[in-house]
Length: 442
Image (cartoon, rainbow, N blue to C red; front, side, top):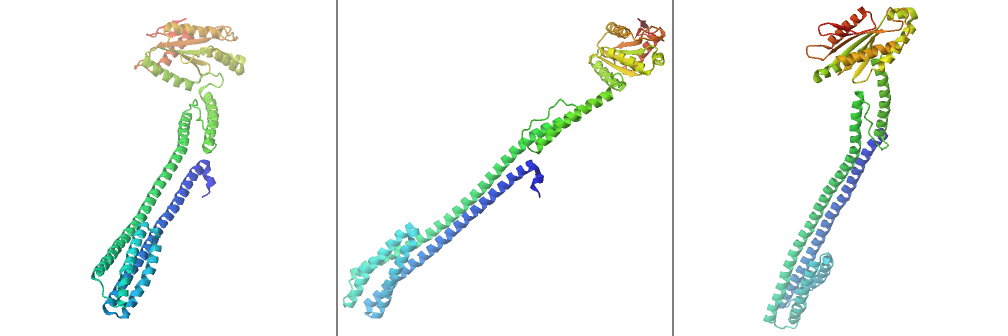
């Protein structure tokens, strides 16, 4: 795997994992050596104790050999019994030195070893040597001294057996020390691994936390952008990594997409010639306003405008002048576009529409008359008009409060019928659609 392909964020997480893994490996190696050391210490200690046990047994046998030789010589005066006696003395000295040397690592055993050696030396110097000397001189042994010698020998034996038990106790201590060290090592190993993993988890959590929050915000922003809501700013992220690049790119995309969407909406929702809303967009607005008015029971007014004799105007002045006429009238109509209370749109050709909200009939007719007078006041010459020397408009109005029994198209039909009456009655006038299809012509 190529690490550079993971990027800065991936490498940050990977480095954290690798560092933790290396720490765990180092800890495992060190604690393995610690376990090995504990095992070696146990083996070494047990071997020393084995040596101590051998030396102690040799010391014990040396006393037994001396005692056997001394008794045999005392009873028979045969010199051959002195051979094990003297060999026992030599072995005692050698075993004593070995025992003291080997018990240096065990203070308790060394103290008891000294006690055993002293008891053995006491028996040797006080009784054994004297009994041998008395035997050489042909003297009879004193019974009291024999009893004392037996007690001294028994003391030696008793201390020897206690010493042997102490060796077994030390074996147990050495073994338990090894177990304790191994158990502590394993506990330290497990605890260290848990700590390293928790620290690694905490580090990675902080890294992810730094990433997740801006990612969630960025996701919310992108969702809003897909719904053409560009009011949300991209999240602030101060790190220099791939997420920063992504956020920066989304910010650029937001700017460009917002501009493109607005441009597209302008093309889709607005009439290219006049700049007013087009018929498609107006129909959507009208439907929404109708639904709102059903809930609020507010009145709506639908106003249809038609330029009088516009075909004749085009024939007389040409289509370029006709387009200029439409632009001038549209510019004036924009003054009456006051969202969300009123909307102005071009339905097509020379026909326009105005939608008023929450205006009664009298208020509506006042606005409509202002529109008619404002267009006439433009004083656009129209020499072929049969109504006026300037361009005029005919207007049809319907004002109702929406109900469940009516449809939006009903308002259009009413206003269209009123517009038809305005044209029939001489044009350049406003006609309001009455409840019983009675028309009011202004």
